[in-house]
Length: 437
Image (cartoon, rainbow, N blue to C red; front, side, top):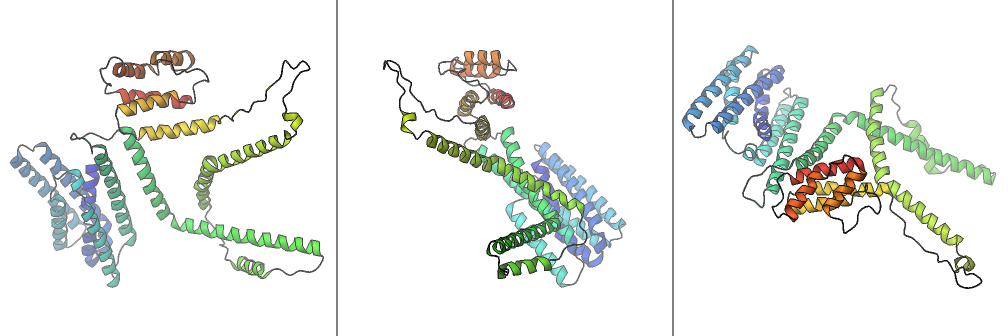
């Protein structure tokens, strides 16, 4: 997949050349001609790369077949462009530049197909071509240009991220190993989420600006309302005609002079959905903890004030002085929701660890610290077999810890080393426990 994305970026690299040549003659045919050039060059480059890598010992045969494929695709591309009524000289020039550029060093490693220098040249040429067309008063499809630049940028940063992650995983070994699925999935979700967020802001920039304008209007109205309320309170208590402050008059005039749109699109109200989602996350992760801590602190303060009498805090004794009660202070137990949140955060950190025996034993310790275990059920002296039996007796599915226990026994007691599937078995067990919590 990364190789295919690199080949796609290599083909889109020539978009500024297509735009420059077609804007001089046939600006209306930029989109269909770009589609033909992109599809034919991508098909040809992917096919020739596959043949060269598959027939690597027979380089001469691979070169001959690759030349035939490239020639056939180039002729087909030129004919399709000619059918769009593009001048023959322009068709030939576009085809030759695109195919020679995309097939140059086609059998290089994936990370060398579209490098940082190639991306920098693409951005520079795109800006220069757009400036030249604007200065010459020629038609320049800026929407299409921004779409191509955004697509290439997103694909480039995604590739760089994955290649850097692969180098990080294989930095201490001479054998090329794949990135663990959990790490790759989490990393792709993070990078993809950032790219989608930027794309969302770019595509919906006008509704977002309108939303910010409405928020500004609401804030002005709220401030003006507060000042009006203060003015009325002052009038009520003083009994005199107190004028509005200068600041209030300015804010009121600005609010009255603020333009109100006559018609608004009701679909813009959908933008409140991510706003409320972010507000809920902030409340759930941060503010609710603060409110809980404040409430507990107030309760502790009230409890201290109620027991401030020395007679109440004194030790209660009987007449015979043989029996008395002691008052004990017990530390407050952490809420189950906080324990679950902390455990899931530790689980995500554990998933980011590289695969090793340390990761296995850290995951097994995380398994024992799961909030789903009943209090006083596990003891420090329990063996792995006893832990498995307790799980099977109290929780479902009963066989959730069987594979993990066998892997632990094979490495710690049998001294045969961890099996290759040990991390996978432990991941499945932790996922099962996560759903149980």
